[in-house]
Length: 121
Image (cartoon, rainbow, N blue to C red; front, side, top):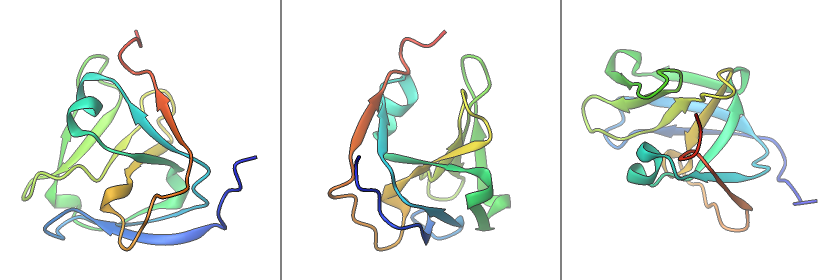
């Protein structure tokens, strides 16, 4: 067993602070993805259920991008361009959070799993 952390609530934001959010998770693992967009944005993500995600501010500042099957919904701040989160393709009731957007968060010691997005139909 990976020794998951206790559940905690953390806040995060884009670079300019227009988009602000909170999540609750125990960080069982972090993921990377090799699909064409994830490889370019180089994010390290944690998956949380939509009930553990709260958009605190910035709904009007978000720009949405979809491609390929048009299922996954990638969100970016329209002011600073940062990717804070996305709605997942395979599990659309989950949100993939860019952990580098979390306040005072250190990902050290959390297992990282590489996911294969490039080969998805």
